[in-house]
Length: 370
Ligand code: GN1
Ligand code: MG
Image (cartoon, rainbow, N blue to C red; front, side, top):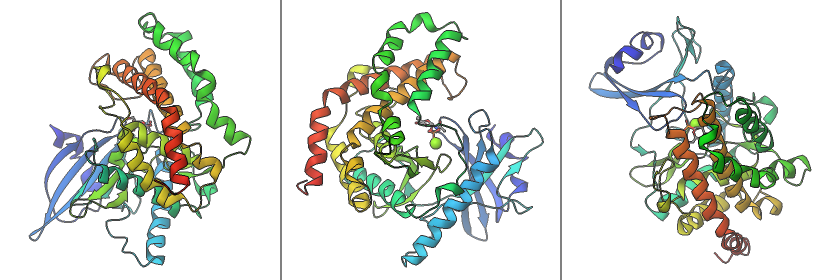
């Protein structure tokens, strides 16, 4: 029963009202997330309670510390722009001792937010308007953080999008073959060896200073932007666990990888997986409208590279975890990570076919023709 997971935890947070019920918010691949319903007088109050996965986040206090400083900054920005920060910025709920994190008796870490009502987190983007808003949401998020001092951010997962290092980690997993699964995935392994140079390109551009490090979100799935249920407009960017220094190409690429695919991230029938160019264009429109003023031409012209690298990276991460025996991502079957890896490989193959079209699309946007 879900209630058993949380009953020992909820008294430690400053939730208002009387507890009514709990449900699980599924979809995340790392943390466990619960939606709590309280009642105060005749008003319903909703909260999100999250258990932080310590295998993934080794220093949960620093994760929450980052979230405090980023949300403070965003809130102040909204006020400066005469916008109402209410429902636009995540709000952490303090614990009874005044922290923003609770450590339970097993040493597990928990945090809570106000649940933003009348807003949708889309696991699958249906319309082009929605996709454009998702692009606007993530573009605006980067824009609001352009003056945030990156040195204030703790690196919650070191080298998170360092694909060069991730490749070495992948090779080590193959060498160790902890779960005895390498023999099932020889073809997939070969696929990444063939793309070794390509996947390191963003890292090299950063190292050479051709493109800059910025404060980026680093996990730009469409369900990490809440859209207002009434207006359909981007409201609030959520899941701030991996806000760190990174490249704008990461946020763009990961968002297209997820939101513009014709199928789910773990689609088994790979013949159904392709890149939807209309959704790609819609996202790009929203994203570029927000970021055109501060992203350099070096970055803007390389946005398509972001799609390739981020799709390749995640495909390789899923395969690495399959080889390791499913230590990192939550899985619903022993083959889940392999299915995910194969789905991302199929998507990458399609992205590769469309490279020239993607480049042309970006150039049209930059010339103001799209
Ligand atoms: C994980 O748990 P979730 O859905 O927020 C992962 C992302 C992956 C994503 C793939 C910290 O995100 O990097 O892109 O799964 N988050 C972490 O669905 O590794
Ligand atoms: Mg996440």
